[in-house]
Length: 103
Image 1 (cartoon, rainbow, N blue to C red):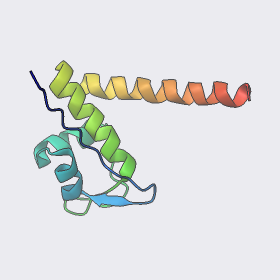
Image 2 (tube, one colour):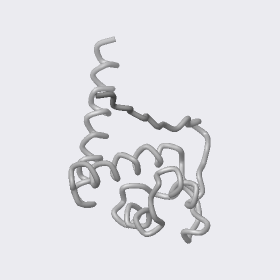
Image 3 (cartoon, one colour):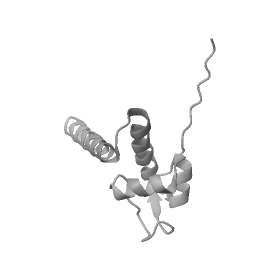
């Protein structure tokens, strides 16, 4: 039995910004789902006061994608996703501190 696996990815630039609709398209999700991610503080627009004006840093794409995968794959609710992502960020920060300390 042959199984075909398709991998997808995004090429990001540190300085690039995405509009709200570009972010929704990239994550293949609805505007309503993306607004919920903003409401739960999972992602935050870097500019704009309404969803039609919102701009997001490229790092928001990675974060939104992780939150959506937690929901879809593990059935984690948005509050749980926000907590998991916050803890992952904290672990990453602590690892960075340890690396700098022992270099």
